[in-house]
Length: 319
Image (cartoon, rainbow, N blue to C red):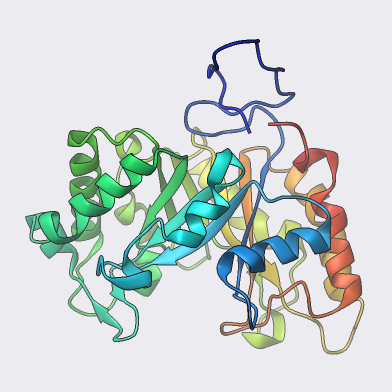
């Protein structure tokens, strides 16, 4: 994976067909990513490798979640598995950094973050580790904040100030391998709220949302990939966000209990849908059973359809 403009000593490297720019936007097509649950008897590294073996290609980036404790495996990142995943620039990381403390469900308030109360204990140590690691990282702070906030955390203004404070600390410390990725809900019903949570163009490199076809799991209508992605994409284009690259930080579909072939067909229609929305430049399948089962490995035909999508020319160009 080559960032446009980079070079190495010695012989000139072969030029990629579809290079990435300085904020890791591909010149064409999309980056192919994954969040996958850790399989029994496996660690996050081998779980990703197992899935890559199943689909016959390497992922461009891996989505991982960490909390605001700066303690243990949940709060200290990049952890050993992420460092293995990103070794030799093989895969980039998307780190979803939440103010929820895993295990206790305690939430850090945004105004405390903005006040500097966590600068020395959390923010600066994280910034230094990422800087020292030096590999490309998409960093998302409190994804889906407008839909997931708890009483006492604050409102959109508080979230924006917390984001900007973290950004400023990273800037002061010279962290130049982090790309700031604003992930929001992306569901209709949040149109009046979402803009209040936008940190601003100067503080955001990518914007993203999390579209799903949850169907009967959430008592919704069945939505094709185009229907799942398109409504909010079009809203973004009409409302001043058309100049930023878009990431689907989480996406996927459940099965249809009345049509056993529908889930595989959904993935067969995935790339044609993405091709209709050219500002979508990165996608991460949410391969887990959290509230709804969006795993691609539950049926051979679903896995095969997902693998075929991942080998499509649109997402397999040399980076």
